[in-house]
Amino acid sequence: MALAHAGLGWAIGVAVPGSDRRIRIWCAAAALLPEIDRLAALVVRQAPPFGHNIFAGVLCMGAAAWFFRDHPNRSWLTAFWLVGFSFAAHLALDAMLSGAELRPFWPLSGRGRRFQPLLPSTVTLILGGVLAALPVALAFWKQVTPLEIISERLDGLFLNLFRSKNRECRVCGKACNNRCLKCRQPVCLRHGRIGWRFRMACEPCRRGSAPKAAPAGVEDYLALQLSFLRSKEAIRLDPEFASFLHRKLTDGLRRLDDVPRTHPLWQGSDLRPTLAKLVDLSRTVLKDAPDDDESRWVLFADRILTNSPDLEFSVIEPTILRDFGSIRWLVAAARWRYAFSGINPVIALRRPFESLGKTVGPMEPFLQALQGDPSPATREAAARCLELLQGRNPFTLSTASPTPSESRGSSPTRVPGGKVDELFP
Image (cartoon, rainbow, N blue to C red; front, side, top):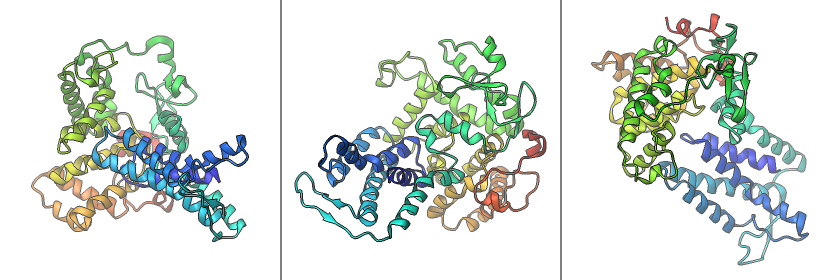
C-alpha cells in the first residue's frame, strides 16, 4: 500500500492549479510519512505509531510552513493545506480500507480504534494498484511524472519519448524534440549524450565548441543566457513574444544587479546576477508586494525560457485581471509551448480558463466582449482563446476539432517536416 499512498499524495499535489515541483514532492512525502511505522516495526516488534497520529501530521504541516515561508502567501497557504490533506488522506485510507487499528492521539493517549473495511480485500488490492498507477495517468494531463523528484531534466527527457518530434537535429536533420543545454540547438538521442545531472549535449559541444563561460558583467551574461530569445527559431515562431520575454528578463536582471551586494540574497554566492537569483528575488518581492507585475512576468518568462513542464499560468493571472490585454501573452505562451514541447494548448489552458472564469464569470461571453477591444492584438488573442475554449487548436495547419486522443491530453499530431515555421504560416 505504500506505493498507493505515494501515488495518491502525488496526485493531490499535481491536480491543484498552481502547484510546482516542491509542492508535489512535499505532498508525496506527507502521504508516505505514516509508513515510518512499518520501518520501525522491522527494528521493534511492537513499535509505537510514530507516524499514524495527528501530531505527526501537525509537525509535517509545520515543517512545510517553514520550508515555504519565503514563497508568496498564495503558494505558502497552498503548500500548507495540501501537505496536511495528503497526510490525512493516508490515515483515512488506512481506516476505511485496511481495517488496521489506529491510535490517532498517541503519545497523549494509547487508546486505539479499529474500523471495519468498507471494501473486500480483492477490491482493496485493485484500488491500491489504481492509486499506485495514478501518477502515470496524470502525466498525460499535467505533463509531469514522479521522475521530477529525481530531476526535472530526467522527467523532461522521459516525457519527450512520447511527445511529437517537431524539430530537426542539428547533426543529422532527423526529427527530434530534445535540445543541447549548451548551444540550445535541437539534437536527437543518437547524436546527443546525456551526461552528469541529465544534461543533454550535442556532438559539437562535446568536442569543445561549447559557448564560453559568461564573464562577470551583467550585459555579457544577458547576451549568453538570453541568446535563444534572439535566435532565428524564436523570432520565426513569434517575434513579439520573444522580444517581450527578452525585455522582461533583461529588465529583471538589471534590477537584480542594482540590489546592494550586502543584501541577504547574495549571501554565499559569487555576487553575479543570474536567472536563478532573479527567480529568488522575484518570489521574495511578491511575498511583500503581490501587485508587483514585473516580478510575475519574470517568473513566467523564466519558466518559458527553461521549457519547464509547469509554466505556472496562475502567476500571471492577477496581471491579466488588472489588464485584460495581457491575455495575448497567455495565448502566445500556449503556442510557444505547443511548438517546442508538443503540449496540446487546449489541455494546457483548460485550468487557466477555469480559474479566470471564477473572477470574470463565464469565459465565452467575456472573450466575445474582448473581441470588441480597440487593440488588434487583444482582439486576435480573444478569438484564439474562444477556439481553444471550444476545444479547437488554432495553432495547427488545420483548425478542425482535436481528435479523441488529443482531448485526452496525448501529444498532438506531428506537422509534416516538423518545422516551426510550418505551424504558423
